[in-house]
Image (cartoon, rainbow, N blue to C red; front, top):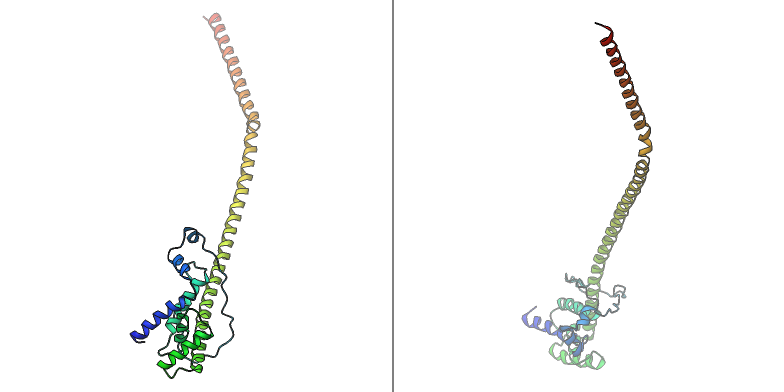
Length: 243
């Protein structure tokens, strides 16, 4: 497109934006209050992916610009601005549905009166502008937006499926780890109980052996003492009787 066409395209977004935000909302959009920043109000977003089929009349491919939000935005007004940005990229050269729609929006709202006025004014600029051209180009723009959101939806569905698979894998892994740890804890608790019982019985286990050893020591000492006494007695006899 020419520079003039580019400038026209940029002005279209500003005009159509007025249909989405009031002056007060635009101010709040630029300077949101702390409460709004912290807790943005959730809005219901209409699903356009199931809209009725519209006959396509152009081979122009939808631009590679995502419609679905990746910035955490859930406000449908914010989302509509993204869609208008895509529509800008789709705008073809010359006057068509897009310019008439924009001109009507610049009058404050889009209705029968403003659309007729916009069409009448722009037809003086381009006499090729007709009702059929408006219908054809408008239908084409709508179809291209539907194609874009269909592709984007398919991509997001794939991301969702991948996230669900990752979630299930992680859940399974954690459950297995928890089971392993639980079994290990149960075994350790069982081992601990057995060790405590063994400790409580340790004295009874060694008492007989200790008594047996003590008895052997006592008997051994007694036997040695008796033998030593016998030797000493014998030595005394020898001392007295042998010269």
